[in-house]
Image 1: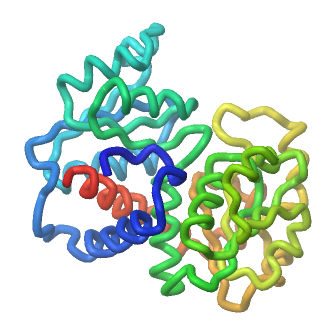
Image 2 (image 1 turned 180 degrees about the vertical axis):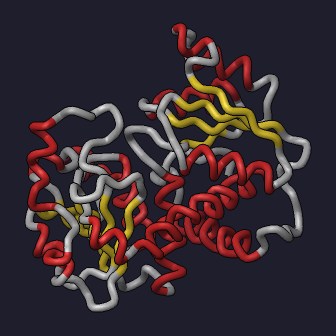
Image 3 (image 1 turned 135 degrees about the vertical axis):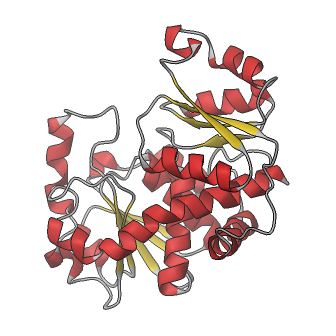
Amino acid sequence: MKHLLSIEELDAGQLNGLIDSAVQLKAERGNHSSQPLAGQTWAMIFTKSSTRTRVSFEVGVRELGGSIMFLSSNDIQLGRGEPIKDTARVLGRMIHGCIIRTFDQQDVVDFSEFGNIPTINALTDEEHPCQILADLLTVKEKLGTWEGKKVVFIGDGDNNMSRSWIWAAKYLGFELVVAAPASCMPPQQWIDKVNAPNVTLCTDPVEAVRGADIINTDVWLSMGQEGQAEKEALFGDYQVNAQLLSNAAKDHIVLHCLPAYRDKEITEEILELHADTIFQQAENRLHAQKAVLAAIAR
């Protein structure tokens, strides 16, 4: 494994292997048997703001023995129009790996090609692979397995989280229902490409949540979509609240990748009721990403 560009490019064996590694690294924290990034310097290039992603990667690289530098787009020539492929060619001769959080998936792909160094997608508009790995780790810790479980993603069905969940469901085989307004579903051409019969698209949030073991939500408007009041107004029935969750399985868990807009996509009551799980999920970004870094360093 040289890069982590998307969940789409992984397979069931790799996903399970990364989760197993994350479990071990979490248990060994503070007493790691090895430091696979010793002597390495990694860079983070972020054109999107971040709390969990930046902190977890900075801590993770250091705990695995490496050094890390943070580069916002305003700090480097990307902010003045230098092509990503030229930035990659330069950095690829100086650093050992790069973690990129940006809008366009193609920028991450191009960096991996032209930089010729390990490249990690820390979020694009297309996918959020590191978050899905953390979510799967949380499910494993809370429920023991995702096998035989019903997972629901509720909110914008055509954002980076929902698409990454769909790819994970295809490879791992669990039932996934995406609950969203009809205009916020992935294009049919994309669904045909994925070809996952265990994934259902549903516009009825009550029916979607019925019997669900894992209910996952995200902000209704992704970064860059702020102020789109017309789109936000479509999600009124898709709030994760007590009434909706009364249809879920008895011992269900609720996930949110954060930041949360309380009393929009999730109520204050439900977020606080499930805060232990949601903030465990946030912590698990650190352990899942260390598993990715360790796998790439091998």
